[in-house]
Length: 406
Ligand code: LCS
Image 1 (cartoon, helix red, strand yellow):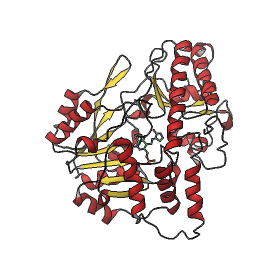
Image 2: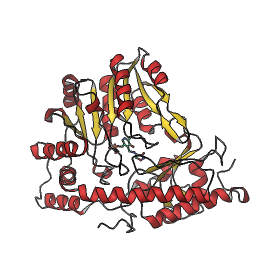
Image 3: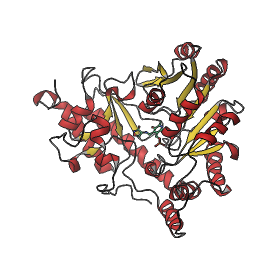
Image 4: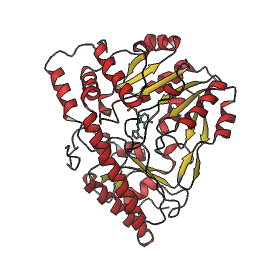
């Protein structure tokens, strides 16, 4: 039994979660003040966890530390591939060839590069919205236009508007589709029929497709992840991204697995990418894939309970909020449109009125007004306090002014 109830002090670790919220959420510097001290905030924003990485991972890092030299390093050993392909085989019934695997310091750095390598000047990127904002930034930094297909939102559930997606994919300038599978922020795990329909649209339009599967290990018990690579077993213009960062709380180790099927694109990557990896990150990742499964199972059971608790709590204390339990991720996506105007700055409201740091509103490109995203990967006691503050702030909304109010 792992202790997911333990509260771990993250101060003085240079954590984004504790020290980076002013710049990331509010685009502000240290002069921004709140009615709360920094350490009083309940932090439910950036997508990392308040849980310790498993001991087997820490042991793997220690073993590597004992080798004492940390010179230039790359993944050369077949044992790394064996550990990761074994993970994919066991969990998803999917494999890939060893030569397809390249390493990146993160999925987002990989997206930034791939958009550059794949697209010509006036070509466009297609993705589903709401979306993790970095999909759009990957287009923006490369001066490429983004084309968004809004998901259908009906009775609290999201689905793909295939007619819209088909139409947007047929724009001759759209050459790349970036899929988030499972989907951040809605938590959808795309089912086989949905993946097949998307695959058909990709094939019909001869698109490149990047399937960002970074959240694929974090499923509610009873769901199953299907890699797009399994649905499109021979399609060459496919790149799959997976990583230990979300799964094992290793985002700061900056390592991710990128499977590039197309040989030409892979060669461009190998030519232009700065191909070195952090030796501690390699050790941590291999240790996680080889020995981390029992911990992950317990983590997912704990997250299941946090989701159940959140749904029940909101139902009782905020009856007009709408929330479906996410099929994947540790992120809850909550519709607060019944309580707020469309243009309300929700992260600001909750920071000032509740002392809760969260993401929401227009932070997800488009089609996300009035929603907040809550990171539930925290001890139950932290979650309880966060939810209580959120509900109290809304229920007393009209009785007090807050500094962000217009
Ligand atoms: N892709 C998706 C869909 C993500 O949600 C994230 C992290 C990343 C990639 C980042 O990958 P990395 O570069 O670390 O390998 N998502 C975050 C989020 O929603 N808030 O904070 C991080």
